[in-house]
Length: 68
Image (cartoon, rainbow, N blue to C red; front, side):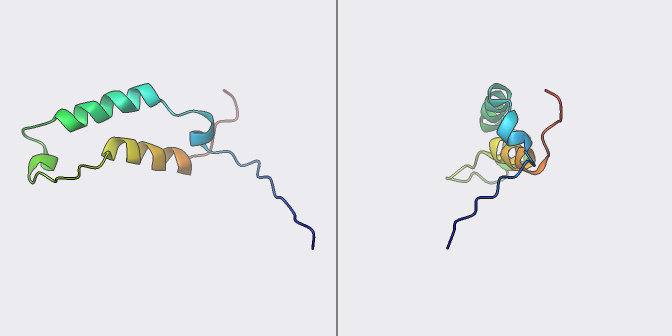
């Protein structure tokens, strides 16, 4: 049986561009919020990188632009 490789031309934004520096800055800001934010209602021992996770999911769902 021959193996057939399918190459998709449907590229996603995460494959071409994801602003790592800006996401890192926003993640650090989110981590340092101590008062007045809903995430401080209960202090979880295992904080999740919410900004980074949202950015990765969003960039994987959006199609890459045709032009750079």
